[in-house]
Image (cartoon, rainbow, N blue to C red; front, side, top):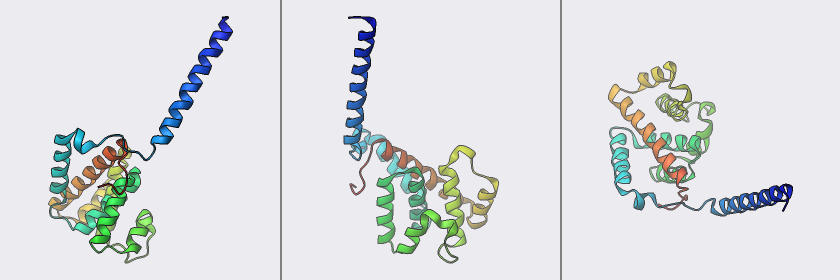
Length: 176
């Protein structure tokens, strides 16, 4: 076999492997990679405890809005599905759920100023590359007591962690 033939054979093998890997990836899209709760039970239980502690003292409807918006930004279908269902069960309106991706442009009265401040903070925590601006932090601080603000920040980083776990493991929406 000549060098050119050998090179072509190697390239053909690589192409075949790459094509097969792509087919496998496409076939697995939407399929969970692992059961995180079962395979990392101590971490999972710690996350459950952290989530419960983060929510303490905050309006449950506000928590659901923050969790849905963060899940939208992070592309976590599982968390978005779960928190939208939880929000509806808690009495959240379809209008507020549907307008959440464009909340800054929603008509006056759809979201309170307190909710808008929380959503702005949640967005900047999720998009951490630029940090949380002084203006967004001050806006949140104007609407939340210091202890509430600490809880809100805790909800923000907790849902970000959940999103990353569920995106990485491809947790399927609708499978609680």
